[in-house]
Length: 246
Image (tube, rainbow, N blue to C red; front, top):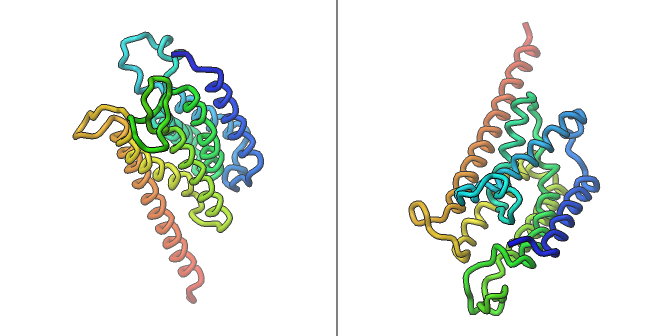
C-alpha cells in the first residue's frame, strides 16, 4: 500500500522537528570539538544505517531490492539499531573517541513522537483487536489498539525525562543509551498487543531484536563506566607518584 499524503506530511514534519531541536538545544562539548567533515560523516553513517536497518525485516519477501526499497514498509526498531551501529562503526573508522549521543537523544525522541502520527493516519503498525475505549477502527471494521499513539506518548514522555536529566547534568554521555534501552523495554512489552507471530522461543522477531540490542547497550554502558574508572584510577596513581616527596 502506498503511503497516504498524511504519512508523507508527518515524515517531513518529523525531520523538521529533529533538525530544529538539534539547532535549538545545547550541543555537547564533545560534538562541538569535531570538524564539519567528521560531523557530516557521522550523520551520513547514521542515516544510511537507519535506512537500511528499517528495511531489513522486509528482505524475505522474495522481491528485488529496488522494489523493497521504494515500497511502503519499514520499522523503527531495526532502523534505530542500524543507525546506532552505523554511527559506532563510523567512529571506529574515523578514530573518533568522543561520545556524541547526548546531542541526538531529545531530537530523536521528539521526531519519533511526531512521526508515529504518520503511521496512525497511514493505518500501519496498528495493534490487535480490543474492546477498550481506546480502540480505533483503521478501516477494516475492527477496533484495534492504536499502538502508534501509545508509542507517540512514550517518545514524548522520554523527551521530557531526557530534558530533565540534561537540566540536572545527569547521565552525561549515557542519555541516548538510556533512551534506547527504555525503548527496547517498551517495545518488548507492547509486542504483546501487536499482531506479530511468535518466532523464536515464543517471542516475536522484534522482541528478539530489542533484547539483543538492549543487552549490547548495557554491555557498552558498563564497559564505558569501567574504562572511565580505570582511567581515573590510573591518573590518580600518576599524580600520587609525581607529588610524592623524593
